[in-house]
Length: 210
Ligand SMILES: [Zn+2]
Ligand SMILES: [Zn+2]
Image (cartoon, rainbow, N blue to C red; front, side, top):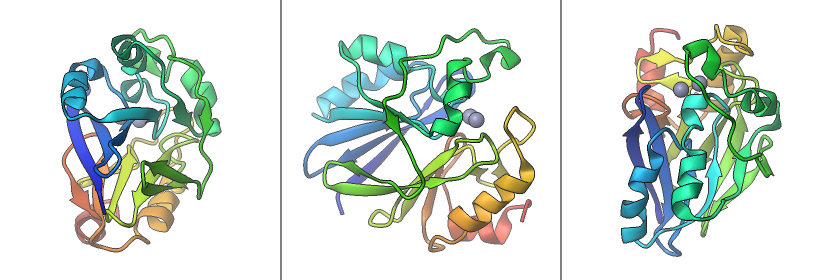
């Protein structure tokens, strides 16, 4: 197992942006590039990581605002992955207007995620799980080898994602968490879109929404 998961707290909504990197090949992917993500590029380049793609858990603006600045700083575009059920939200600016933010959508996604897709970072494989409820096209990325899951805004340490925004549904979110997160081994580490790391077992035992 050579998957490394590095987290960076970025932007006004304190988003967790993640760098997934395969230590064997040097391949790396950025998940949910928030505002200011270009500031971590020097660290990425100093480590010799080679960025292959941007993966989005969902289209909310705070998880995508950094894409354009990242590509500018890199001097090239990377493929962007998104579930098609979140494409409309992405093209409408990710709900930024509702928060008083102005945000132009980034480059059109070129990778369409589907449930059960197997994605690679170098030699490491992550599984896509479709988890609607916070947004219609929300997905999570699971590595069984690394015993880790990146869950975006589906579940947090002691909390759950909002369901009052367009496309949200508590009934769906609850089902997504029960079927796609709580079925993972309890020792699985949970890396959320905001807040601190937790685990499947801890949330099963202590999350006040369950
Ligand atoms: Zn969100
Ligand atoms: Zn968020």
